[in-house]
Image (cartoon, rainbow over the protein chains, first blue to last red):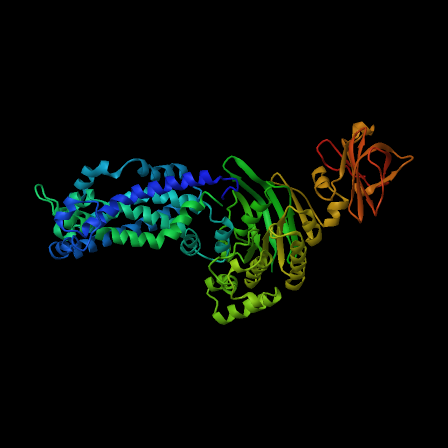
Length: 279
Length: 333
């Protein structure tokens, strides 16, 4: 709640800080986008200039859409991200429900164990994961990526959703039990709709690292058929020559889906982030 | 068809014993109220009856059938919660019908039974609304309607009025009393409000620290409390409980006398005290006295004027004092 005593100076400073941060955060994105619409020479001549009719060029987009198999790469990214989010939300919510709803021995310990993944980066286990995937014959499949990303997203999902599910009224769940709903119905029909904002938060936090990841696609699925957008863009970066037009165009295209999803989720997201803090 | 028998129910959460051996019988059609201070186990007992909590030991029998391992939905019960607990995404109609739908009842029957319940509670105009579009009182009526639709053997109410404001509380209380007469169903009702307990119950069960202190009709509890706890809990203002030694009486540890059973006089009487505070309630006047043996509350009917710091003499009405022994048990006779 806004304090009525907040002075204009204070508010002004806060807005200044927020504005400065926004500029810093958006600047690289802005740079990528404007330069993706310029020809090669003008990118190097004046990287900060906005494309003018004389420097405007779609050559980057042309290269991307004709040379690489970018439709396929996009499709791969979509499949991997969407399926991973689906599993993260499903399993994360189920685990969170069990932890928050049922009293059983080792409940707290189990919760801590599941949250451990927040502190230990999954990349530390890359070698073991690769060995496992080779043994299972999953190298160069999207399944490998989906499995890894689901594992990577679960800890945070369980952690956030667990907190939210504790806030769902016990009476409501008990009313469902008396009306004869099964535990699964209570979970899917009563609890999930009430934690939707939290689900959106988790979805966005899960989606962005997956979509942007270069590490696991490079290691687990570098074949042409399974390349994701971020990995696909790398074909334009050579050891000696880099096709900057194409790289920037590919990156610009890669931003779009994230942006669209963010806009869709943002209202829910903001509710999810703040609803824990302000009642 | 709606009797309940509870045999030696115990319930522990880890090291904490919440219920320490409860035995109780409720006859068909009775309105039974569990009262007690918070933490006395009354809500836990209700949840054990509903099957929402498993008892650590002991048996629950509904209509003579042991239901220890029967899930809540199959016990023939319906429950009304303090927080209403309506399904936020369903309309009033669907809220009321969900239980029957889950039980696989035909749509015609669900519609019929919802209609009866909604007209009983004058909810006909709100059937298509969502809970968020209703006031607190309406929401609680929907919650009661949801219970009625199930046509249960046993109604369970968990502090249904505590979230309502004072005026609405009286109305809803009357409504529940009317429903009980109309449906002739067995009802079990949990509250910490003794006014609700006294006005609604056929039988009151006073719980304290996980044990039953006394079971009886409201007037039995008022006129013949078996323990000092019941004596102090039933009646408002509270019964005066006076250390017997300070009064020079032997054969009892504590003497109890209700504020309404004391006469006052400005000239003479048994106990002398000075007025600390006077509350004028219109119908009643409540006087707080400081005496040699401690504070004393007196309730007089009608309007009376007494100055603070003036001296008053109080005399208990004959035959209206209670005596309790060292264990807090009432001494008869």
